[in-house]
Image (cartoon, rainbow, N blue to C red; front, side, top):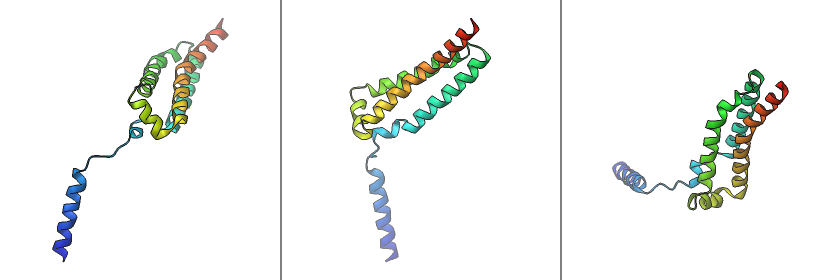
Length: 119
């Protein structure tokens, strides 16, 4: 009885491992909480950098703008975009777009505010 159960367990493990993975598109997308934490982190870093020199927030602007454009391009893809919308909903798309826009604008805003105060 023990040997038969062991063989059935090995057969079941072999069949399950041969099955294709059923991972969704949402596994590859950042969570909405992570997006908002990124906005808060970039805003905090930009504010601290702008307190030192007006041009320091511009140093993080380029990489952040590149990452935000990658997220927007992925959501605008004709295959991935509708799949994400189906799995996560339109609210996620709205939050991702808003977070991407804030990630791009916030460092420029703090640099502009600091530069205007120096004049």
